Amino acid sequence: MKPFICGNWKMHKTVEEALSLVKELLVILPHTVYEKVDVAVAPSFTNLYPVYQVISGTPVALSAQNVYFEKEGAFTGEVSVDMLKSAGCSYCIVGHSERRRIFGETDEWVNLKVRALKDAGLIPILCVGETLEERESGKTLEVIERQLNSALEGVDIRGADELVVAYEPVWAIGTGKVATPSQAQEVHAFIRQILEGLYKDLAKDIRLLYGGSVKPDNVSGLVKERDIDGALVGGASLKAQDFAAIVINTLEVV
Ligand code: PGA
Image (spheres, rainbow, N blue to C red):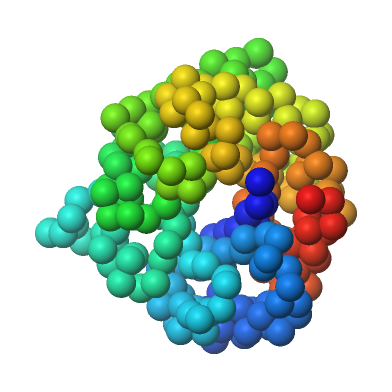
């Protein structure tokens, strides 16, 4: 399966900084990489359209980091799927643990967001993952199962490329504590199994990303695993050199 590397810029970069990051990335990444790896960047809302104007016509895709599920209306401060589409997005991250934890997003909201994205033809990058406490009390798989089943309730897909799932153990995000390849693979295999229950044959081709302290020197070990089909990269996506190295190191093992 063609791996997918997405850079989650979180709440970083002014317009100017975002433009210089993406321009540098386009210069550094050799054109041949895109034949073997799909690449996307996920800037903040204010940087989506400016970044789109630079990457449009290149193989680099655009992702948002969040969305609101209503079509339009009096929802001060929110952004709709159509707005994302018109800004050039093809993907949107949903259910990131920072949104769940800091902004109180529930499984139900995540489901509504996934549905709204699907209806608009945007591809959700659905994030799931357990906290350290949940892992230590042996609840990892139970949490993942609950998050997946509720986020995907009533969501039909016709092609494996209509959905991306990212396993992001909360204890590994921004902490420098990456999951070992076998810890990640165990959960990825479980995610694949749940997706098989939901989407039958399509499940084997749905891309499952790992996220949480992915760096140039640990990405190859992860993507070598059978069910790890790429990475959602936070901190290391903020430097063009590091992000490019992650893409290139991925390409070398696939
Ligand atoms: P990190 O973040 O790479 O900085 O750990 C990953 C993410 O939150 O998507």
